[in-house]
Length: 102
Image (cartoon, rainbow, N blue to C red; front, side, top):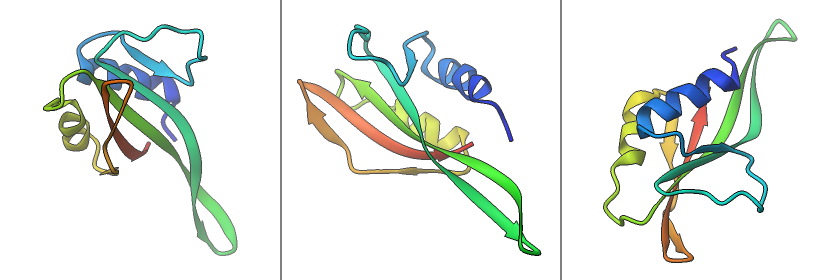
C-alpha cells in the first residue's frame, strides 16, 4: 500500500504549488487553487477468507476561483483509480470532488 505522503507529493506535482492540504483545521487559511483531501475509507480485497490487500480511499476536492479549472482533469488522467463527483460552488469558490483509491 502506498503511503499518504507519496500521494501528497504527487498532488503537489499535479497542482504545481504547495497548496495541498490533508485534513486542514478550520483555522488554516487556504490559498487557491488548492487541493484538500482526507481518508474516507479502506477497500479490502479478500481471498481465502483473508484480507490480502488494502487500498485507501480518499475524498479529494479541488478548490479554485476559476470555473473552468482543469486541475481535476489532470488528477483523473494521472490516477487510474479515480472518479469524478458532483461539482458545487461554496463561498464563491468552485469545488470539484473526486474519489481516489491509492
